[in-house]
Image (cartoon, rainbow, N blue to C red; front, top):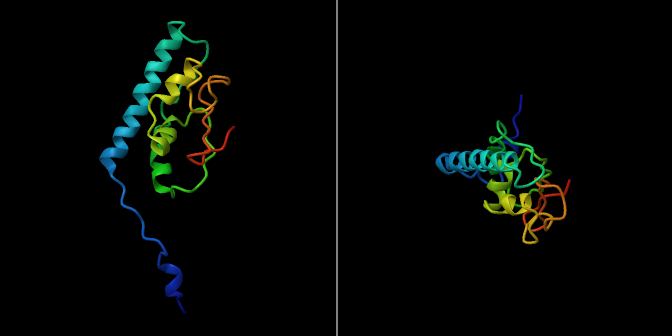
Length: 122
């Protein structure tokens, strides 16, 4: 049996993941989710679907290359935070602000999209 040693060598070495920073991103996603759910319940804005339990998507995005395109859905707040680092973007979108980075406040919140960060619109 022959083994192709060249195929087993990675062309680009794997980047080490900083697990503390990754955990911080997941906790931030949960805190923002809880804040948005509370504000929706208070009637501050009309619609929000939570993302609790899907924070691990931050780890999936961290394992990808920076130039890989993402197709996120409404529960991928952790993935958005990991790729962009923008904690205020989801808040601005929830309040339908023109400064919202995804849809400039014209669409449903949590429709993550960004040409700059290679995130496809839904």
